[in-house]
Length: 105
Image 1 (tube, rainbow, N blue to C red):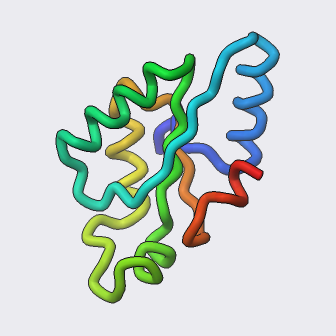
Image 2: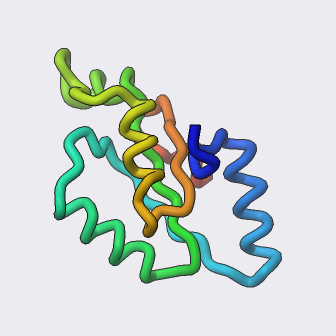
């Protein structure tokens, strides 16, 4: 597993380190089931807004709740690994809710 894929506690610790260093953490989320160039461009722009980028991805269960049976096409572990492989992404976290609100509250 990539060191970029974090639990909620690990993400909170990373955020505290960045804040202590005076750095800005940018947050975005999505399903990212079929990664395409539009996603990559979006993530590059998001990363440009701060010093580090965290991408929260919907768990398989929350994707099914949002998009119905048959989705996701790519499981959450593989989606997280694909995003973590992008140089523009600093951290990835998987969340179970339909909304990532609990991660940013």
